Structure formats: structure tokens, C-alpha cells
Image (cartoon, helix red, strand yellow):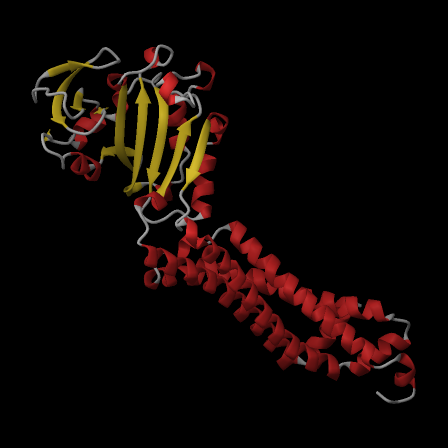
Amino acid sequence: MLFRSLRSFLQSHTPFFLMMILCIMISSLLMLFGYGLYQDYMLEQKSFNHSTQRFTLNANARSEDMERDGFFMNPEQLITKDELDACIDRIPEKHLGTSSLISVYFINPASVIMGASIYDICTCYFHIKDGVKSPSEETFGSRMEHPGAKGRIFTNEEYASGTPVIIVGAGESRQLGGKIQFYDGKEYTVIAEGGLFREIPYCLVSPDSVVDSVSIKLEKPLSYEQYTELKNAFSSIEDRVSFSRYIPFYDEDYWMYNSAMLASLLIAVVAAFNLVVLYHYVLVRRQKSLAIFQLCGCTKGRAIRLYVAESLMLTVPCYCLSAVLYHFVLLKPFTRIFPYIDTAYSLRLYATGFGIFVTVCTIAIWILSARIVSKHSIVERKGGVV
């Protein structure tokens, strides 16, 4: 009966059928665009700091009481460089490149039980493009901005080949070109002095070095979808690390962040109202069909469920089609005008929007159908009132 009713609707009221589809799709697109536009506006207005662009993880092995235990770590929670390499290989290629910076802090594996000193820690700052790791000029430049900093960054050739060169921490007063031994026992040539910890090419870090923390900085603030993809890349060690993603709003603005979803709800309500106006006219015109259904034994409740199911068969696929169209066709050109709009969207956001839109539309159509079906009794229909 449902498909027969829907086919009858299409054949008898084709213009209104098409108008309903158009209304649902436009309303869905407006709801999705409104939420993304709000996110873009907030990021533009708040001049977000670089924390919003970072995906970070910290090893759970380190003691929670730094004042008492220092760098002491739990041996059962340690993560090695070998394990980290396997995770990095699983990062989607779209999150890598010269616009993405990976920062890693390593600790000398021989010192984690006794407690690491500042000289038992090394850092690596690098980009990955086409599988090749290269040093970060941006990070090196920021480290050289204080008095006493001197030297040069690693060359791409040194970084790729594993030339034993090192950038020492500020205040070590090492002669450039001089030799120094690091915690892995190798001898390195000093090429620069600056920053807090020592830095060597990533490929020279020993495989058993202990990972303390990892940070991945992207070009733009992370969307929830990006955060999930990066988190999945580190799923093999997720029981030994804590993940974090900075939400790009200040504490006092959380009410504004939540109001974005409220705005989406209001758009869904307006869309449902427009849908109800169209569907009301259609149902009034279909009173004759309804009378025939009821004369054939269709109860009032069944008739209401029929019309609600009919509207759902239009609303659900139309919303899904609109979401696909928006994400894969419209979002990219919108990003050229609103640079942070794409950070708002994720599978969860689309699913939430679906829930809001379909629920509001279903409730509205249910109320309308109940009103129309109850307007005239079956006795009035038999008497020719309708």
C-alpha cells in the first residue's frame, strides 16, 4: 500500500512531489551550510592559535607526579620508535606533506628507570612528502630567534642519508664543527646551537628509543573527521597514550558553540514548516483517496502511519543525497571563500544533522496527518460530505 500510495502521489500531483523533494534538499543544504558558516566565522573572529591545528599524543608511561618522580616512566607502558614508525606509516597521505609538521620527543631507553636528564632527551621536527622525511625550516627558525643561537639547519641530504650531525640545546656552548657523543653512543658533529633539547635526523634515532610525545600540526584547524583518522593511525598504541585535540573556542564561548547546533535545529523546524505547508495541500487534495482507504478498512492510525512513512521515504534519501552533494561537490568551492568551513564537518555531524532534520520533519508530518485524517469521520465520507 505504501508504494502504491507514493506512486499515486507522484502521478497525480507531480509538481508538488518535485517541489517537496526540492524543498527537502534545499533545507538540508542550508542546515549543513549554516553550521559550517558559523564554525568559519568563529575561527575567523577568534584569531585561533596554532593549538587548533595540532593533533597530539602523550605517553601514559610518564609519572603523573613530575615534582616527585621527574622523568621516571612505567616500563610496561613504554612506546618505542619502532612502534611509532608503524603508526606513522598508517597516517593517510592527505595529512602529510610540507604543510604538515611532525614533532617527536624521544627519551634515552637506558634512563627511563633511573630518571632522564635534559641530555637524555632528543627531538625531531620533520615533514613527510612522498614517503621522504625532511627537516623543518620553520621550527629551526623559531629556535634561532633568541640571543646566542647560531648555526644552520640540516640539509635534506643529511636528513635522508642519516649523516651524524646534531643541533644542541641553548646554553651548551659547543663549538660549531666540534664532536659530541649522544645517548646512543654515536659521535655527532655540532652544526647549530639553539632550543631546549638536542635534535638529530629522525633516521638516526635508535629503534628502541622511548617515545614521550608526538605532535602533528596541519595547515588548518583539525576537523573531527581528521582527528578520528589520525587517531586511527595510532590505534595499535592507543592503550598507552592519551590523545588530545584543542577545541577552537574559548571557555566563555561554549554556549555559542552549542548554539550552532541550535541554529541547525531552527533551520530544520523552518524546513519542516515549509514541508508541512506543501504536504497539507497535497493531503487535502487526496481526501478522496483517504476516504477510499478508510471505506476499505484502513484505520485512522494506519492512515497516519502511511502518510508519515510516505514522507520519510522522501525525506531520508533526499537528505542523504544532499549531504553527499554538499560534501563532495559544494564544500570545496565554499572553502575558497570560507577557509575554515570544512573543519566543521564529520560523519558524526552529518549523522546528527540527519537525526535532527528527520525527527523534526517526522513529528511535523505526524501532527499534520493526524489533523487531516481526523477532520472528517468515516460517516461524513459515506454521507457525501467529502
